[in-house]
Length: 415
Image: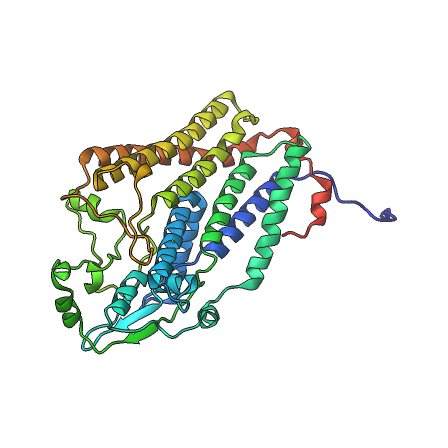
């Protein structure tokens, strides 16, 4: 007969490699899944295509959370400028985000519908073509498909994971590079979440704005500023919807950057609007901190001295290239506007809305700038790839204390 154990049996004070991997991957998955607020899909997009797009952005949020953060902080800056431009209590950050994600579709007379962002909508309103859409914040929120239960689970899991990692450090228990890399991703997605706090989630159906004017009438009345051929929509003369990185660079190498179908049916997710100098500095500090988290592993135990050296080199590369990227960006601002970006004062409209400073002369991206940016990007990518591979390879040999549990942390609900 099998012997029985009487009384309350406490949980073992150890964990296995699978526990380390499971808790880290699950936390990263929950963060990246719940944080993403993608723009509205095109009317012709299938559910499968929409989900595939979201999975691609989830992958980017996992392997490069600093890039998704750049998009998020750029979109926040654009929404903030829009609120200042409209200067109307009916137009809030949620309205601005809703517009910039393709929530409003313009239907001109005798023309195909086209999505308009907040800046284009403000121009149309200020020129009398339409009025501010009569939609309340709560109506936009009702359209949003925010999964409260998923966010609730994510909050508990992230809180548990962060506390567990901090507790291991306090008790001098080994923290694996796998867990610390997960912490870096979580930190990046948390800031992204704050930037997108007012951005609706998983919207599908836009609001149609009917106007009596035709596109031809709008372009004629706009004058010389609307004479250039458009690449995205006829309203490109107000604000181009293309990826912010492509216009100058791709034209330099004679690569077409326009969409296959014009005008656009949806607004892309890969556009970083103009960033003011203060916002650029904030973004630099955040990405610098993200890169610096990998240097916390400086004195961690590694399976071999060579792997430890390579980790130190690659984590240093992340920090150095982040600084160099910022220096190159400021240098580009100097060439573009004729002043050093750090001292560049933001020009404001009569209502105090921040606008992009005018570009001096016929500005073109130089081959030197392209070469430097390309070299930095390749170097940064190779370093990131090594760190991503090492967090998995390093699991083959861990310190004994890496398998010791923090006992009290298991009392906190987690998955």
